Length: 217
Ligand code: G3P
Image (cartoon, rainbow, N blue to C red; front, side):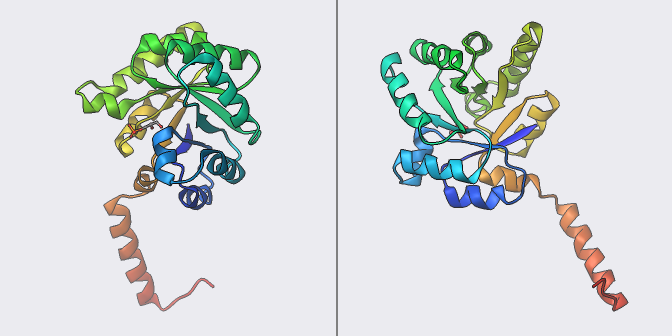
């Protein structure tokens, strides 16, 4: 399972990339706004930090302007994936870019039918938002299971990129369902390391070790 980081905070990305566990980055207009930086500058910088795909989202809503924005974003680096919303124009753009061999991440997916359309449009990634579904009382993970079943039926190459992840349990559930990628807010990746019994166990080991007076080095 691949881990992407869902942020436009370059310092966070650098810090987490040093773990060796980061396979890519996803951004969206809200995350760019939060960074307070110009989109082209920040995306280019992120592309220099990670080797894997960096999702940069178009902000136009019509196909022609989306294509122009994509062309500009693609000039920034070789590891850009163009992110488009799951709309008629977004999927037209997905089809056109995919036909040219460009990786496209289709975002704002909330139904299995939408995911089917994105796969048919040649998306490299489909981004179902599990947390936002949970927020309105619909089990987001059921959507991941449905998409996984549908994609398996037709051998679609589109990777399931679980987005809107709120905590470690989402990551575990997505992994159990065989999702290809989870895009994690930095705090969620950090939280995955933690278990109170790990802390307690390490504390006890270190105390017992200190009593021996030994040193490995
Ligand atoms: O990048 C898209 C997605 O991960 C957004 O998550 O927390 O704003 O629902 P969230």
